[in-house]
Image (cartoon, rainbow, N blue to C red; front, side, top):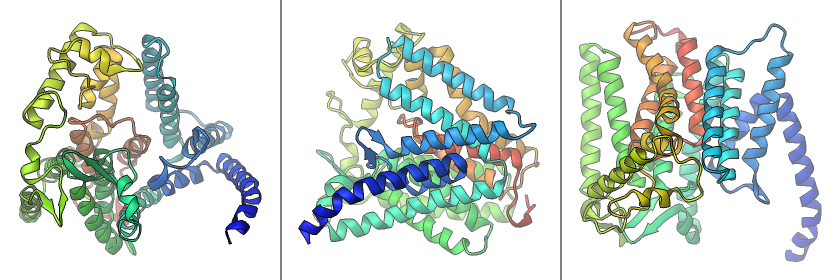
Length: 437
């Protein structure tokens, strides 16, 4: 059997290349399919590559070319001012940082340009809510399905645990197929907000599956032991449901009851023993007092203060930014009183260090645009409570609160989610004709 497999490889390789080229050409013709393929590949996007080039990059280029071509050939088609402004400011910011860093870190620069154009293509392709729902549903389902498959893989193939779990001196944390547990936790936040929409609106065939997805993604979020992700979701959901949406008394009681359940679950979570079934946990129980970095600091909180202090010193010394230098941690260490060689675990400070106060500030403000737009419409009661944009606001708020303790806003899937939340707010969709406020 082994020899037959070896004989088949020379045939499979050119066949796979031909199939790949056919798919790329099809995506150029129908760029929306490219977005769906991106969602399908989400669980393994970091592992599929052709030599040094990731498959998702090729798909991204194809859908960008297809989206631009399709838009340009449409008679009377024009670009929205906001879309052009976003593309201009972010392209300018990335170019500025690349030049400032003396053309270093070219791989990250190319990746960011790709993310900008994919996001811009999202604005062009997704012009109605049904398409938005289709992609978001597929995105959330793939996260939930990957969580299930990870569980199965852990049981049937024990060697996979070294990849699926992050094992450090502090203990074990679930990271799935992502780079780290915190990014994995951020993905769960976005999926939870999407499943919440389909459950709240009782969409046919999706409400029950959405409820199952909610349970799966919430359990996965707890398994990451990411305190900032859990805190971000709880704060985001609470702010949106209790203050922005201005719910009725009956719903206030319901929301408070749900919040109480979450608090009890989180309280039980943080009081777990230091180990379960002989496996040492990382961020709960006694282990929650361990240091994040070995910089001679007694607790994780103090560690963050040292890192933030180094970040503020760097910003004060380099107010126009440091650009895309290859080793930014070394630049931060030059201005740190404690020799901390770390970029700040805060996306706002990270932007200020990379791009400077002016350019970085403008780029940070853009991340807040959909939140401001949705809140304004909700507060003015021009957007229904159970609209798609309203529930996406939970994901946006939770993800950005999570990133006040990390810096993971460069994830292309979040950029697409961000762009779709703007479109959802502009369209003001109401599932199944719901107009309740």
